[in-house]
Amino acid sequence: MAGTGWVLLAYRMPREPSGPRVTVWRKLRRLGAVQVVDGLVALPESVETAEAFGWLAEEVLEAGGEAWTWVAKGSKEQDRVLREQLRAVVTEEYAAVTAEATDSLGRAPQRRTVDRLRRALHDIERRDHVAPKERDEARRAVRQLIASLEASEEPAR
Image (cartoon, rainbow, N blue to C red):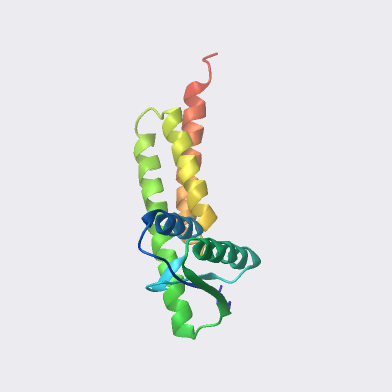
């Protein structure tokens, strides 16, 4: 990711009603955007992230707010800081999935738990722009849990 640009979304929304603000905040979270400063968020540059910020800008405007999108390049230090922010969020989430999957291995795994962890892992991967080592650990833990569940569901021969 070094040397890539960033897609920036600057936005300001009316305080009331709060619904549109909450909706935008949730969508930014699902995208994995990092907050640079209040009202300015960033994602690594790609066609997908530029399009997503474009749609969000339209949503902000429709809610009576103001929005601008840009593609920019930061200094090496700015890039490092933004990448670290991206990494910190997903690393924590991957660690939580790994911990729960590992804990569940000690007990008889439940289909409901396995399905929830699989969905959680998929959701994190969708907004992961940095692929930290914790991603592989979480994948491995969920795969082990799935294998354990499948083994326990096999009929005895």
